[in-house]
Structures are given as C-alpha cells and as structure tokens.
Image (spheres, rainbow, N blue to C red):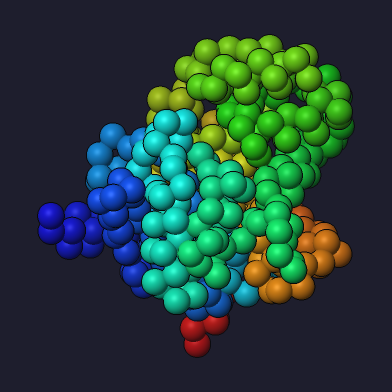
Amino acid sequence: MAMGGPMFDNPSFDNHEGVHFFSDEKSGLRAIIAIHSTALGPSSGGTRMWDYASSADMVTDALRLSQGMSYKNAMASIPHGGGKAVIWGNSKTDKSEALFRAFGRAVESLQGRYWTAEDVGIDTADIETAAQETGYAAGLTTGKAASGDPSPVTALGVFKGIKQTALRAFGTDDLNGKTVAVQGVGSVGGYTCEHLAEAGANLVITDIDQEALDDIAKRTGAKIVAPDEIYDVDADIFSPNALGAILNEDTLKRLKVKVVAGGANNQLKTPDMGEKVREAGILYAPDYVINGGGIINVAAEISGSYSRDWVDQKLDTLITTRGTVLDDAIAAGRPTNEGADEIARARIAAAKA
C-alpha cells in the first residue's frame, strides 16, 4: 500500500519528522509511531491501542496526537519533542505478550528518537512487557527511576485546570454544588472524578466500559448516562477524558455548559472550532495545557533520577502558563487555543533556531 498520498495530503500532516509503520505477522502487531518534532529533545508520548475503523483513521490519529504532544511538551517546559504510538486492535481481546514484545522492538529500532508510555487502552503491564525489548519506555513500576502509571498525575493536573478555568468563568473555583459532565472514566477520567467528588461536585458520567462506570458511580455517587447523552446534560462544566474531536458542529449545539476542561487529547475536531466554542459563551481550557501532568511525570522518569519535587514544580509552572493563556484570550476576545498554539510553536521554533 502506497502511503505517500494519504500521508502528505492528510490535513493533519504538519511536517512531521517521521511516521513509521510496523507490522509483525506472528503477533499480529499493526502499529504506527509518529514523530512530529525532536527540536526540544527526543520525542515522547504514550501508546494508544484502539480498534480503528480504517488505516486512514489510524494515520490521522497518529499525526494529530504526535503534533499535540509537541505542543504539550513545549507548554510543560520539559526537554522533549512530540511523538505518539498507536496500535490497531481491541484492547480487551487482542493483547498478548508477543504483541507488546514486538512493539518494544519497534520502539527500540528508532534508537531513542521516541520514548513511549501508557495511554488509552494501555496499562503498566503492557509497557513493562514492551520494556523487555527496549530501553525507551517509561511509566514503569520497577527500575531506578520508576514512577508507575502517570495517570494520577495527569488527573491531578486536569482537576487543577478545571478549578482554574471555573474561576474565570464563574468568579470562583469552588466546585461544591457544580454539576460536571464527565466523558470517559478510565484511568485519567476515573481519578479526575475522585478529585471532583471530594470537591463537592455533582457528577454525571459516561463511558463504553460499564464496569468502570459502575465502579466510579459506587465510589462517587455519580449518575450514569448513555454515551451520546453526555452532551445534553444540564451541567456547568463538561470534562472530556476519552477520545478526541468531540468538540464539533454537532456536539456544540447541544452543550449547555460554560466550561470545557478535560484530559482528552485533540478535543477540537478542527482548530476553527475554538472560535465557535468561544462564540457559544464557553471557556475552553486547551487540552494540552491541562493534561500535561502525565508527560511531566514521564519526563522525570526518563531523566534517570525521578523527583516528585521537580514534577510538582513543573506542574506549578504549567498552571501559570495556563492562566496566561486563559487571561490573554479573555482580554483579547479570541479563542484560547489560538494563543496556546502560538506559544507552543514559538517555543519549538526557538529551539530550532
């Protein structure tokens, strides 16, 4: 299959440094590792396992996610460029040791240009299997600088970002009594729900994983709705923590919230949706300035000497950056994603100069 056409003509292609396709007949591995930029350092970003509808969808996801990681890492002020891996398969039924060992060999073949970790559909056990074949894996539970699953740190950052955005939308960051519609209660979404419940928020949740939903509802008192109903909830805040492109023409008409702030990557279907969200009277926290906690944690592990103090310092710096993005956008009457993109691109360009 000739990939040049659908690659370079793809609207999500952004002069990516490399897009690498891997297959392993014995294990059934079909994977893409996309490296958007190494200007700030070796690329890093999690691995996602998803049952894509087509290879074209898989390519687009890899391109969008890796670009997002470049911006996320730049905004988080860590010495890494942006990369992402996607594996085509059902994360409930298609996993095997052979598959993740083959994936580890794929990562290793890039000789350190890409570091991997957990993302949607991938857990620490999967990455630790891959790490048997590569030295470029993080989010591990064993090893000198091991820090484990980065999801709790991502979720803490998301929770702080929700409060920060709420302060500007409602005049207070007190979430007690606020209704938050949470889309996705997996690793990041689940931990975020716990923080929100502790803060007194009323939760309405959805996911395709009924077991995860039942667990979170039991622990937080959340109300469960069907996946497509989450956009119609009469809520104050919408927190997307699953897959991307959920802010689009169709869903925007249905949202009744004043704030969108969550951990999902690439929430805007297209960049121009940022202006449409603003025109709808919704304050949007750009995804890569709210969900950077996990990659900060991963970067600390990659450094070889994990320090939670360093992680917390970077999280505080990211909070300051996020505040600047929100305040500048409000003052200028422009979409938040435009200002965030400009800062991220400027930092990457400065590193190239």
